[in-house]
Image (cartoon, rainbow, N blue to C red; front, side, top):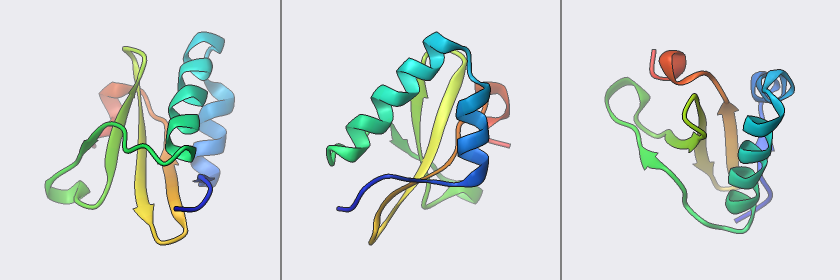
Length: 82
């Protein structure tokens, strides 16, 4: 698996996170970079994506590609699955 890549939205989401949540997101991204699968598979409209918890308030949405994990977004939990 290759290095973790971020979408423009994910980069903006990460910049806007409070410091403690950003540290947690960085830990999840480091786990992905180490080749670990984190979080759960999503279903229905979001099939093909995975969701990892980033603290209690946010989720890191990503998909696995041949080039490695691709982080789509890091939205608040209430908006993550819409």
